[in-house]
Structure formats: structure tokens, C-alpha cells
Image (cartoon, rainbow, N blue to C red; front, side):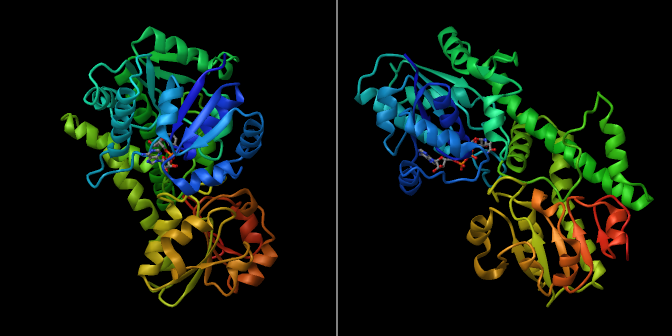
Length: 445
Ligand SMILES: NC(=O)c1ccc[n+]([C@@H]2O[C@H](COP(=O)([O-])OP(=O)(O)OC[C@H]3O[C@@H](n4cnc5c(N)ncnc54)[C@H](O)[C@@H]3O)[C@@H](O)[C@H]2O)c1
């Protein structure tokens, strides 16, 4: 019989996890506290934008394998394996806030006790959590019921928003942290369909598994930051970061990915995970100098970009309107959490400028944050109307090859600040643009 799986928390990670496990034949019950979201899901609507998700979601609902509820009890009673895909937002001091994870663990303990469930329940932590959380989750359950028959497994998730389904279905690797043989076996079986091409499943101790996720995200954040700093260096000495990127990326020791300079990393993971790792290290009296520096340098990156814009306008942008393409923290998602575009908008508004923005998917997130403080355009060309300059903040595909004649006409100026190096500098020069990008010579100025 297929496994009965419970997924607690139906956000970007939970919904993809639940849907993909259903796709491999499991019966899945997804639970969320957000009644409106569950209602939407039950009505067959995917509440997030994630390429490829809708087809799988619809198929598995049709096949009766994917269900949604607000009732945690239903999941605890019926599902042997319970995935915790809950938020772990940053606390004021940068640490990961575990309130929700521990509260749900405690609630599971209460249900296990009330229902007198003696069969093993495996709590699988998919949220990104500090090293040692599996011990705290176990304690949150056993504090309620000392006899609870549970195992707590750490199973960090490495999916990328925008490629979440692809990443889940074909993971580079799966990391499972448990020292319990039955849990390890069940988890291996669960992930087997996704690793048939030979990608590894690593079974580690819980703490090492938890550390993997912070190590991976912090390394990637650091790599991006390194390239951002190299871009600044290239700008000041007249070198071209894109040539440097291609040349060093072809070194197999370095590799091509995550070498793209821009306006700083953002999103719901890198910023908070870097801060949480730095906080954990400080608590352990370990000095992670690279990580601390990455965080500071990343904050500076968007400031530096805005400073360049302000300088171009003689030190004063008040009263000027800027067109901005891209609000999501990266392309192919509607997620705007810690979006670099937001940092730029914040600074421009602070300086008395106004912004007219367009994003193919992320207006809702921006509206929640800025309300009517900025204008929302109908399409990418509509965003340009009467603006002092165009700012490219997210490299959606549709921004990569626009009709530049139309851009120039609608913009009312020829100035582009490209925070993602979407365009070829020679081409921009030929079109007659004054084109500012990251780590490359400005043309047309
Ligand atoms: N988003 C990513 O790309 C990504 C990738 C890897 C890991 N992670 C980690 O996974 C975790 C979840 O991230 P996310 O982006 O899916 O978050 P999210 O905010 O999109 O989703 C969290 C969901 O949990 C629900 N929830 C909150 N409290 C609940 C409760 N008490 N009971 C049931 N549901 C509850 C929320 O309503 C929401 O739907 C975080 O720790 C994150 O760091 C995220």
C-alpha cells in the first residue's frame, strides 16, 4: 500500500513536497493553519506561482491522492510520516524563530496522547532549522507525552523557487538525518522514485543534516557576494566582470553557476539563513568571518546601485519617476520576500523619487508591502511612461530582449540602470542608450 504522508505547512516547500510525493503514488494530506489558503487549494487553485506545479497538482487531486485540511489531528491519526514544512523566519537577533515548528511539535504530542497512538510516528523536519533542532522537536513532543513513540528526522530541502518541481523530482542529492534504522529505510523508500538516475541519498546524523542546509545556502550567498565585490573592483579598474565570469567559470574547480553579479541576493532563504548561521556560530563562540562579511557586503550592494543612480542625476532624484522592471526576488516566482527590488524602491522613495513598476507575477506581494506608494503598470512598456530612467531589478525572460525602439519612445529618456546585466553593452550603445550595468563600463554616457 502506498504511504500515507502528512505535510504540515502548505507554502512553497510544503505544497511542492506534498504534490511531488502524491505524483510518485503516495496518499498525501496537506495541512495548513491558513483557512483561506486551504479553501483555495480544495477548490483546485494553486496559491503560488511555480512553473510545472499546476499540472501535477491537478492530476493528483483528480487521482484522489492529494488532499487538504486545516485539521492537524487528521494527519497525526492517519499518517505515519509527518513532514514539517513550516516557516522559520528570522528573529530580531538574526536567529531562526522556531516558535511555529515547536508549537506544532507540541500539538502533535497532545494529539498522540489524546488518541493514545502507540505506533511509530516519524516527524520529518523539512524547514531550515539550526543545528540541534531535532532534539528540541523531540523534547517538545515528549514534554507533552513522555511515552510518545516518535522519531525526528532532519530532511533539509534544497529546492529552488522557480525550479521547485524539477528540483524535487530530480534532486542533485537527498539528505536524511536520522540514526533510526526504520526511519532511514522508510525515507529511502520514499525518495527512491526521485533518485533512480543514481543521484545519491546521504543518510547522516541529525546535526550534520541540519548543518548541510546552512552550509549550502551560505556558501552560495558568499559566492554571489564574491562576484558582486569583484564587479565593483572591475568597475573601478576598467575590467569587465562578464568576461571575468566566463573565464573563471570554465575552470572546473570553480564551475559556471552562481557567479552572476547583480544587486545582491534576496529571497526567503539566503538572507535569513546567512544571518541564522552567523547567529548560531556566535552562540557557539565560533567566528565565521566570511559569513559575517557576506551579510554586510550584500546590504551594501543595493545601496551602491542606488548611489550610482543618484549620482547620475546630480545627487538629487526627488520628484523624478523611475520605471522598474521586476519585483520578485528572482525570475519565475511570485515570491517577493527580501526582494532586492524592494530595497531599491525603499531607497528611492526615501529620496523623494517615485516608482512605476511591472512584474509578470509579483504585483500582489509588492502591493502588500508598498500599497499605493508605488504605481503598478499593466505591462513592461506601460511601466516606462515618462520616467527618468529604467531600472531592471529582476531578469525575467521577457525583459531580456525587449523592443528597444519602443522602450526609448515610451521612456522619454535613454537611460537604463541594469542591475542584472541582461543586455550586451555594444548593442545598447548602438541603440543609443546610456547604459549602466554591474561591473562593466557604462556606455553612451
Ligand atoms: N521557499 C524556499 O525556496 C525554501 C527552500 C528550502 C527550504 N525552505 C525552508 O522551508 C521552510 C518553509 O518555507 P516556505 O517558503 O515553504 O514557507 P511559506 O511561508 O511559503 O509556507 C509556510 C506555510 O506554513 C503555514 N503554517 C504556519 N503556521 C502553521 C501551523 N501552525 N500549522 C500549519 N501550517 C502552518 C503557513 O500558513 C504557510 O502556508 C522554511 O524553514 C524555509 O527556510 C524554503
